[in-house]
Structures are given as structure tokens and as C-alpha cells.
Image (cartoon, rainbow over the protein chains, first blue to last red):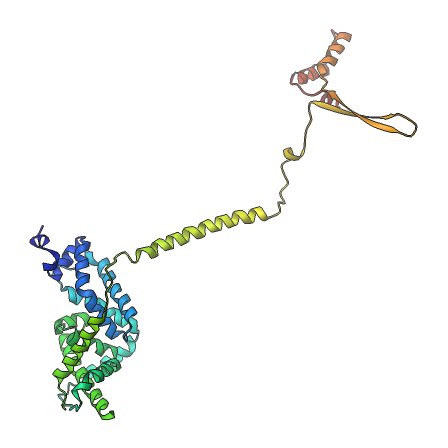
Length: 192
Length: 144
């Protein structure tokens, strides 16, 4: 028995909990659920059009898949990356627009990264409302990328593992997504 | 006012936190999928039982075109012999009298025959005697 089996569950890292869950501890898995369920539900809520019931189902689906595959967990792998990989795939399956998205990503990746300065003149009080609308209009792949990095605060290597692309591609896509958002915010401000 | 990237990122995080505070999470129930499997098994078993019961009812409702066994409809009387006799009481009136005669055992006749010719027993008589030993009714023996 390793030393972390003697520590209380709340004091253990995600990876320690997952190792215990893989060994058959349901309470360790419940602790992981307690840590991540709300966060994943919020992620799904923002990605799946603000449908709370759908977000709850998708969240449950993530943990169900993780629970069923817990004995295949590779010790040492980051649990948040693993859970968000499942979540990302559920989102992709939900939209069922992989062909369109793949084409869009291919053309986006072919474009050079422009260090353009897009000036957005917008009242700060209106920014939250404007950004919510702009994010909902983004292609789902870019929206997920933006959300994973800036809202879920996952690192570039983690996102690269989740999406299955090189880190450089993640960086360039994030840069282009930010430019796209700034352009849309500019249009939003001009129309107001 | 010029909006910076950092302001956009901060706005996105505010939105995310606002969503998080609204989210209600149910307790973890790892066995959610199990009832579906159980329900499927119950449904299959129920449909199988229904099929068997339905088949049995259907078979019972069909008019039977199978001939009933002979033993159920034919009453064989070995013990009695029925005799019917019409007796005229008056010129205009007759009545039918039915008599049930006890089985006649051929042994009595055989004894009589033996009494007549005790020493000369034919082979046919021996055969009849042998058959009578098996307790065969007299009227059947009387037939040619």
C-alpha cells in the first residue's frame, strides 16, 4: 500500500485519486466527480448553446465513460486533460459537423499568422454582452479552443493532447481566434 | 474606449464564473446505465412469456379437427347383454321390454357338451375352451 492511501481523499491529487479509483475505490471516484462535475457542466453549458439539461447529460456521460475506463487509466497522466479530452469528443459528436469543421480548420491553418492590430472601440460595460454573442457565433472548434485555454485555463500542451494537434497549431489557432473575436467585436461596436 | 486582449480574456472568465455559480450538480450515480440493461432483459423475458401464453390461448381457441380417441366415445359393455322384446298387451297397445342378461360364460355350455360327449372333444372345442380360459365373453365366441 502506498502512502497516499492513508491520506484523506480531499488532500490527495487528482492523479492519486484516479489511481485509487482504478484500483476499485468508488469513494475516490466520487471525490473526482465532486471536483470536476460543476466545471465540466459549465463547459458544456457554454459549448452546447446554454442548454442546462443537455450539459448535465453530457457531464454525466463524461464521468460514466471515465468510470467504465478507470481500470485503463495510465498512472501519472493528468486527470483534467483526460476528462476534457472526453468532453471535447462529446462536443464534436454533438455538432456532427466534423467535415465542415475540418475544412475550416485546414483553410485556417493554411493562412499565415498575421500580427495585425485590430482596434476595438467598445464601452467596457458592453463588453460582456458583446463577447457572449461573438463567442456563440464562432465555429465550434475555435470556440472550444478559446474556452479550453482562456476559460478552463488549460495549458497549450494539454490542449494539444486533447485536440490531437501539435502545440504550434494550437498557438496559431488561438491567435487567429483572438483576431476573429476582435473583428467581430469591432463589427458589433460599429452596428451599435 | 480601446479593448485589449486582456480585457477580452477577463470578460470571458467572468462569464465562465457566472455560469459556474448557476450550475447545480447532482450526486454521482455510477450505475445509471445498469437499469437500461435490466429493463432490456425484463422486456425480452416478458415478450417471450407473452408469446408462449398467446400461443397456448390461440391453440385452445382453434376448433379441434383431430378425431378424439376411440376409447372416449365408444362404450364397450363386456358384462351384460341387452335384449329387447316387443310384447303386445292389447290389440292396440304394445310395449317394449328391455332385458339385461348376465354374461353367459361359455364354460356352462362346454360342460353341457362334455356331458353329451365326454370322450370326443374336437380340436375346435379345445380351442374354444382355451379361449374361454382367458375369460372371453360368450357372445364373442359365438360369432363365426
